[in-house]
Length: 283
Ligand code: C2E
Ligand code: MG
Ligand code: MG
Ligand code: MG
Image 1 (cartoon, rainbow, N blue to C red):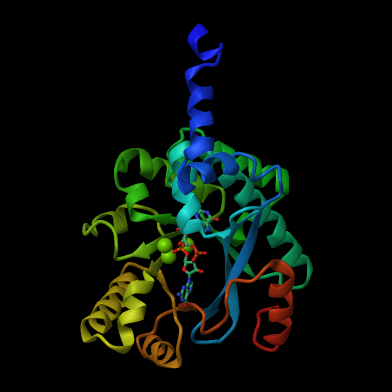
Image 2 (cartoon, helix red, strand yellow):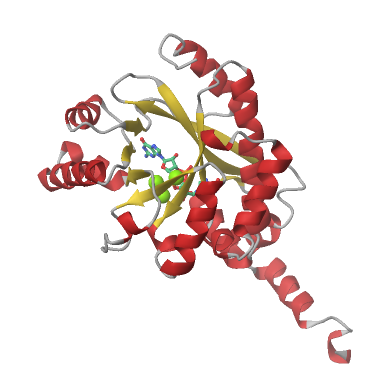
């Protein structure tokens, strides 16, 4: 203690991190202040019903604009947030903000629009997860029947019994459950009918391959058929061109999401996008 001038190990660690830390360490430090400094914001990515061409839902995607580093992609800061535990307040902030924005969207007249929210693995694994979700729903007076939670295979697989209970409790709150990045996780499919799931989102790597790889076409076709047999709806993510859209239309995929429709948009831009799509959207 005396040798270090009274500073403890943690302070020394932070000091070291600050002086010659890697980008990752610096980001971890800055991330601690990101919420209070108002550096986080959400953008919304439209999801379209393939048969009716109506926008039925939007996926909330978090963004972080940091003073020194600029815009940092979630693929970079979400893992840092998960490792440090900061993801929990961040995840709660995201869910609350998405609920508030959904209400704004509904009040604009788009009263059937759904909101899809990505759930963090660490947040989900907490014992108080369902309570924390319920608290946010109460606080925001959320219409939970219009909310979808995006989970990944790796989040729900490790502890199947506990997970089923948690998912059943979540469903009782009124939400629908979606498996994100489907096809990239566990090869086991047995969980699909053991868990109370509603929607499968096919990973964009398979959609990318639709234009050039016959195997990817077969996989997507098989996933859609299987999902429908299990009474699950199917979203294809990462649709960037008409060729992919036509294939998915032929295969009776339910919903599509991707740059072919739009980039993810901040809420005010989303509302103008809705206006330009006006005649198509469910009102
Ligand atoms: P994800 O949930 O699978 O989100 C889809 C990602 O694919 C998004 O990137 C989206 O912008 C991108 N994408 C969608 N359509 C297309 C397309 O047509 N072409 C291309 N090239 N990309 C497309 P983003 O926003 O960078 O998010 C990356 C990942 O970060 C997400 O994957 C999710 O795992 C995580 N993430 C993002 N926002 C949140 C959040 O609010 N909470 C949590 N827990 N995780 C989040
Ligand atoms: Mg997602
Ligand atoms: Mg995905
Ligand atoms: Mg992903």
